Length: 387
Image 1 (tube, rainbow, N blue to C red):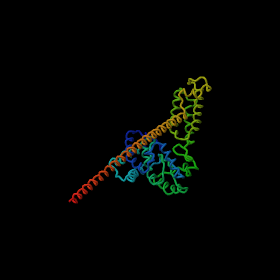
Image 2 (image 1 turned 90 degrees about the vertical axis):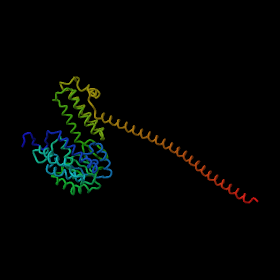
Image 3 (image 1 turned 120 degrees about the horizontal axis):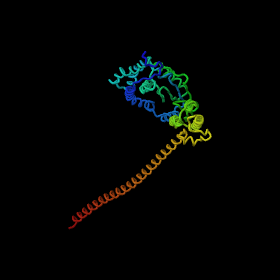
Image 4 (image 1 turned 90 degrees about the horizontal axis):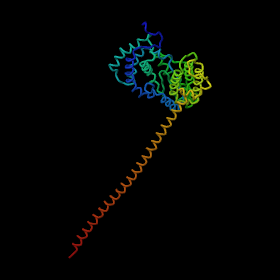
């Protein structure tokens, strides 16, 4: 075994540039076909708020769900099965032959990338190529599931029409396919139920009765990060501590700003301020020497501390402003179209009037011609009758 390898299934490799090029090639090949078959697939639709909208809409037509994921997915991906399945999956979804470049990658670059593992299975963590390969590896299962599906890496949410369907899908499609890929289902996260009766957790959100909230697991994880940044034993300047806190606040607030999270954000803001006050009052390197009493919310804000709730409200205001702007534009367009319609009707009326006049003139010409012919005939008859 090489000395520079890590014995853990999650390992890291060095060659980033070649990996990126190979990952881009694979995604260029697979993405258009995946988008045709499954537009909401995470390889083609990375924007999570659109995923939330999809879940909300589909839950109205499909009242039941099946939620599952794969146990130790990245470390469990078998290299031999992966190399065998890649061309088969591509041909199945595209119907196109494998190109020379694709064959070259399958023969040289991909085996070299996979050989960095000390085992015959597993993908390195933190690699864009691993992300692409992990997404493609389960495409066979995605294609077999005819129900609407939302997938994020190895996390699945399958929409079902009745209570028995989750069990049938699990027994007839999901478990056999995972077994074929040498993968196991995660029993701890396996769940089925009804959307308006059972809470379901997916991509960090809890979905229940048509509303998304922040999952308890993610809230606790966020609190642990805040506690770690405000340990009393840490000796850092207050500017550096506040900057680190703000990084966590910005990431968390922007990800969960689409959820019904006002109360959660208020509680977390209070928790962050409490931890920071405690840290600043006991940290010898802090400039604050007055204690907690003078560290009001406004003082902490002046010191640069951001607020989860303020970021969410700012986004909500911006969204309302954009909505009003779009509505105003639509109203303006409607008035413009109405004006155009009025002008068009007026023009049609004028054209109709002109057309009627032309028709009348045409009839008059015909009558005039007829009268002239009658007059000529009468005169001709009169000349004959004269002695």
